[in-house]
Length: 315
Image 1 (spheres, one colour):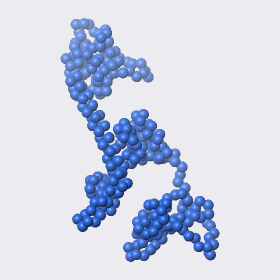
Image 2 (image 1 turned 60 degrees about the vertical axis):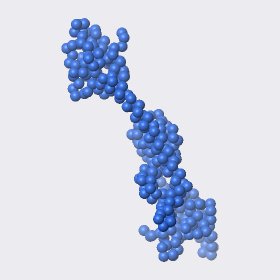
Image 3 (image 1 turned 90 degrees about the horizontal axis):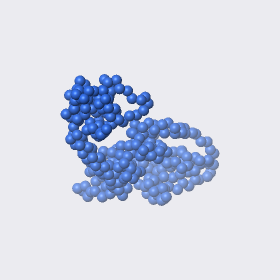
Image 4 (image 1 turned 45 degrees about the vertical axis):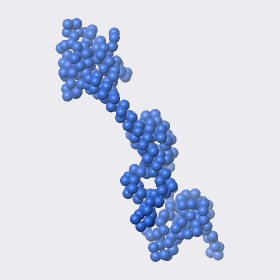
């Protein structure tokens, strides 16, 4: 049997909720059933429906729908293929409307592609400005440096929220442009919020078509699987009173270079027995007085000392 216009329409609208709802309603009214546990495509459902009417209806009782040209019993309330004349509040679609929708969908896909590419390029540009500190070259009316931080430049000159700017930079820094286009910035931002150990797995899931909800669920599970953070511990050791320890002070932002001035935020590490150590950082207060911040830690971890030149306050 040659495929009718109605079947052709259903095959083109297998994603259309109107068609699926109307065909399902016809099945219920006619008492038609499908094999349990088997998935049947919309076009196959419509073919079964058409066969039913052609075999159970007298030729003089067949009516042709003016909208989709499907044939059914004239006594049936409305068209069982498109719902014309009995839509129950649903609006039937013509082939011209379907073509218009398909064209709009193609345009949307093209614009989404351009948006994703632009967001990745924007993140790369922001990274360049921050990493090269180009924002420092801007001067005010007095010839002084206008912006003291990258965040200030982003907010006032780039007119962007600092949180969004950093999200774009992180995405551009950790993912290729192709991933941004195929996976999308929204899913990638969720991957970046997950533990580093799970990002490779989440990226593979996203490439395979995982939804944002699925990525969030897997990310939460990965966080729950992380080992608990070690609690603070007290280290006891003996330090001779007559021994002087020399602690080299290094520039905080260039750990391999010796510090020569206080604006470099000098940081030193005094190794203790085992894997323990003391982090020392020297500050200059607003009144010119010097203060040293000291924190016990473990060799290899970050100092986590104040990042400004202000003297630390005692909690």
